Length: 253
Image (tube, rainbow, N blue to C red):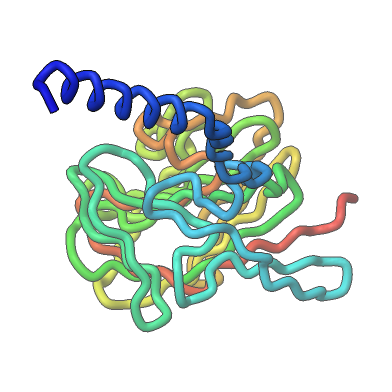
């Protein structure tokens, strides 16, 4: 076979093969896998606390004593219902051996309630507290008063001042509720505050230390305790321990 004939033969064979292959039915393109139905997104805040160190608010332990409802605000096991107060420079807040321990800050530390159902009047708050280190106030209890807030200070201004902050813009060291008391370290003190529409009262170990008519008076907070609203406890360069924190709702007269 001459070279020309051989070339012609190879060309014809290649053309026939290409024609045969081109006659095959084209394959259907691969189908993508089915897309599962989208699931509805869970709300961002469900089950999440409002503060990185906060614990979701549990249902409070509630008991009834006649016409009064008693709510336990501290379970002795966790910070449930509370969050560390963002004062700036605050120390650690932790629960240990059934006690809420608030370490010293620079200058303040504390916790604030995350509850949204707190009464504004006709209620009592009670707790037990002791100072273990430091010399300044070891209990600054901030609480609602009608449409405002107030604080009961124990051991302020270098350790001895007791009173309400503020009345007519005057803090506990300058208004008529000011008292001087000596507090011992590592001793538990029972504290109770009663709020009524026209009166604030307070007791320490059953001794009444405040009986203030607030009719026509301006009730407010010092600026540094504003983060404690609506309900909070704090200290000043001091280590404090708290237990048995309760709120009692009283019937409206």
